[in-house]
Image (tube, rainbow, N blue to C red; front, top):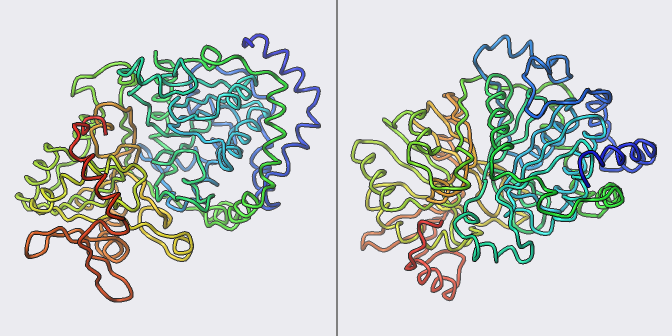
Length: 533
């Protein structure tokens, strides 16, 4: 279905407006629903929009604009930041951006699953489009497994346009694309952002899926995002525009058969039904009790105002190898200060390579304390990455790097306890580092060759002593108690130290794993695949 034909479908949707309103109501608890509705009443008669994001001045009359413009004026050149460490709060923040938007929603993710949170957020985008909001959704095609029919259905809406980054020609199995077009298919868009009316944005490490938002009894990812307003938001919008118009972003209807209005109506009806499933109802009830929801409802939400710089890769990285000075990591080095005293690094997929080990070793020799938190083998979801990291572990420790590995937490422990860098979880997914109690990076960038050379990435460099000191305190006070400290004993053997019930437990093998898994890791570590990970 072409865009002109969608206008016919739009008319059909208007004729069934009452039915749509009825279908869209039962998405959660009453308190949450009332708040979302209060944010979503305006904007029904919004004019048509240009292809680029509007300037903040053009959306100053929106609900977000009227709320934020006076606050922004009081902090010229700065950005207001709210750390979204709590998984449920991070999801509520996204729902509220979708419900508040009146002109535009620009959404960019590496993974979007068709589970509880994916369904609820997609329905929230649909509800925004029904109010007259222009919705642009840019997804990496590697992270849309099983979503072809759903995406095609929503793309049929006249105000929703979906594009895929580096789409696979063969839809099933997509793995064939790596065999036929490996050089291109291996380059993915790892960026993650959601921006409403060019007034507020969420940037960080979370994809869209239950494991990122505490909505599953299976694996949970400990992660970190920030909600930002002020000076940095237009930079995020401009960056989205250049990704949206790049050669790697292909309109969905050029990849998949066009969706129908019947298929769209089916998805519209399915979303509220999915929300009635027992696990979905428990999750929605939990959302209503999360701290960010209460702060928003009571208007007690406070932000930190700091100087923030957005850094990102050129989207052309998705098509070819870029020169070193064109990469985001080069820009990151320009913006971040060289550590003089301390570097605290959190990366779920930590592959330092020989060059990285040498860099850290040089820092330690200059008197810099280097501390790293990554996943233990029992907690990682990508064992191959751990295998390649493991062969650099001894060299890091000999160089004087302080190394921690996150333990896997069971679900009951996850709900009882809090750990740094996000909600307590079974697998680390946050990507952040702090320099000398002065600067913090939060974004999608992992400290590995894939983030540096293959995937496109983005993030914020934040000049804020308080946020940097929070990372420092976490390494000082919380990480040693909640995670494994990896050391070399007096004989040079690798040793994992675990603090439990006031006692120190020593492990001389990868904790929580069997010999067969350890053997597999040892074999994989010998393969020449470091550049791919």
